[in-house]
Length: 222
Image (cartoon, rainbow, N blue to C red):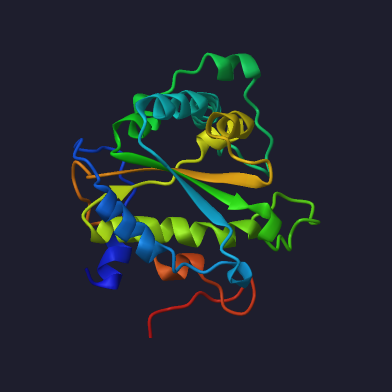
């Protein structure tokens, strides 16, 4: 499909028809997605392809602790898992928070689940010494993840980037034999969406742009 159409209609698909995603199509998706950029073209991303029901069930269970905190903070009016404002919800409340099925069912219902990792030995984390959570390493893996979703859209499939299971990264690594020098960056369910959204809600360009300085004028359509 046309590039701009794909960019404007690739939504977070969480409900799937149950139709399989054949290896041939998945290979084509990954074969095109692999041209995503990475720092120094070192290509440190690795993709675990998960079809086994027992492994996907384990991933869904590992997503529950992170999802409980996410929902508990949302109910408290907080921005979940915020690295600037500390969590104000007590552990007891988080522990008894009910997680809606929509947060874990995609990992069970999708045709396939991709666990995307990054080899930290080949990444230039230029923000590693700054007094904040590091984000620069993501530049070497998330372009690939987004390319996967764009390519899936082109093939009539879809998915979403999930991250709550990463709060339990040591257990995810143990489950799948992921080496210590790798970071788990995304858990991506892929399948045929129940419905295909074509109108997405996003901020207009002037709402997120500033020219020259943070207090500069937004970019307007000429």
